[in-house]
Image (cartoon, rainbow, N blue to C red; front, side, top):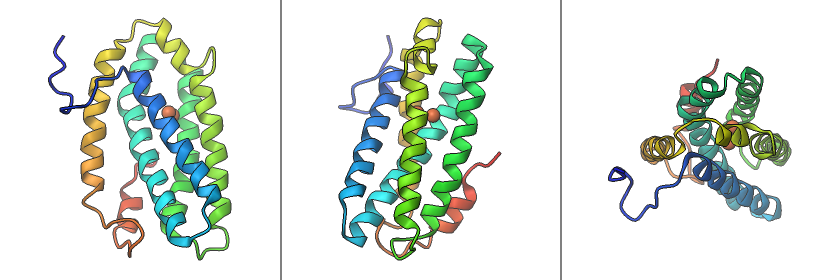
Length: 181
Ligand SMILES: [Fe+2]
Ligand SMILES: [Fe+2]
């Protein structure tokens, strides 16, 4: 099987392994945010979380979700997941546009973490989207490869933006370029 497109040194993961690894990474950053006391540290972590979630929701919406819908025809699971993404994106845009000096900043990040926790459970629980995907005839290896490639592309374009922690002149245009249904 041709796996040459994977980045050197990057082990090719199937679609579900890739998405679950993203979930674990973001959960870790949310935990670190809760313990953080320093404003710069908070801003850095929140930016990492928001950037990672933007990339994650994009690869799910562009690649995994459509393939899931086609393979399973499970509109309920599919549509609910998309609606949950839309809710998270509104909060992500608000967090991106503000900072730790905002009295509501910690609350916004906390509520985002709760929304994501719920959404991740819906995806990972028995009978949830990932379990249904495993039972279907989706080509999870090919989708994993496709998503890894798209993820790298999106991360590259994000890294052209100003670094987190500093003045984020790119934040507005970035939020504006986010896809909203
Ligand atoms: Fe996900
Ligand atoms: Fe999702």
